[in-house]
Length: 606
Image (cartoon, rainbow, N blue to C red):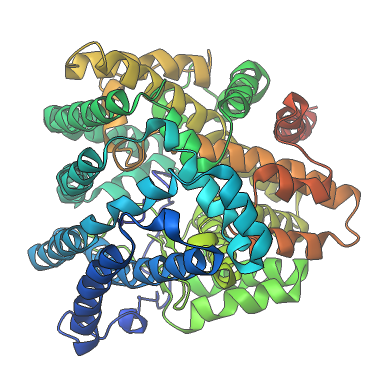
């Protein structure tokens, strides 16, 4: 199955006005000129024949191949992935520009169904690869260096061997995938179609979430209560989507014999369960010295006896209502990237000049932000909902980091370029850190420095603490669903069980906040995706500490890490920096950076 990109940020995009300048839109013609393009029909026809030919040539015969024959087989599969990925990238990106457009939704659905049909005969490939003798494969790697390049791909496929079903059942699940995709589209279209009225103004979800960062407390409260009202009206639909997708996953996991709901995600991320649990435990243990401590500081800054949920992302009273226009955002991010290394600026530049970014907020456009790599012989596309707050600048830096990473990894080819989610956040979070440090360097007053530090701490808490709380919520949700259907109230209770623990004693929770799980796309599109954000942030904090301690030669090692794409395990990638994510102390190193920034903020109080 070829899936759509997942919007990467679920809130906090910032508010803005009409003074943002000319916001760029995508030029998708690098993929196809139109839905009627002759090249699109050509590729669909080619794909249908290529899949049929591949099955005819190789089904039941993989054990007969020598090293050269297996290499040719893999390269043919890679070409199929490239063409299918190109078609689905075009259909998916058009859809995300306007999810409420029936024609775009139909085109996407039609492409998905055709590709599912065409690729169903290929299901045998991974199944038969998993039946190859390990010693025979090792001998072939030794004979053919080009084949050996693909070993990480084959290792990841073969990691599924214990959970593999019969050929017939695997084909059935492959075909059934379009049904799960339909539930995802129902979620997307429902979210995009929601309408909120705040102080007499009708808004979409992105602009309403934006108001949670408004200077005026009454405006934030109005937005929070309106979000709760609309989520409450639609909670049965969202509960149905979550029940269905969690049950589908439970059935598939049970048939495959996967020991936990998280196992599939850990396998696809090429990360050991104990590493993820060490991360989760370190973050939860760190709540008091991270989120609890910071929000107590913020409560004092805001002059409140108790914090409400609409105060979590409130600007500080000393903060200017600063709008950063598009040119200003581009300039600061480009300066930060180029100062780290001119090569990084050169890689980022085409995104701004060649229609690789879609930045404006438009009716029906998917909320959030993402960078989609498309295929390795085209280029990535970045989606934003840019509204001019400093946080939006950080989102631009984040997604552009993904884009640079994807460009660098493209030389690995279609099968090796894709980076596990845990490592995919490396360049994005590093790009944010570079931009933050550049903005901090330019701060002219202590007040400006304090605002920047507080904003960075909040972003880190949202990336680490909030996402681990999300992960705990998902773990509880999937465990509970295995015991039967969950009512909206059941899901609400699970959500609230992690919120107070993660945010801390400074907060009260309004009636209706219990439904705020409803709009998070990752829970539906990619279960257990969210821990990758915390993994990436902790990894980057540790990396950045190495950079500060010993900058000599760091850039070259960093670029080599990004160029590796998915061709190396996290242990191998981090070794040149003297880091090991398997070491429990590794996560404490990353979390201590957040703690030190809070120390600096506390010192400003003296």
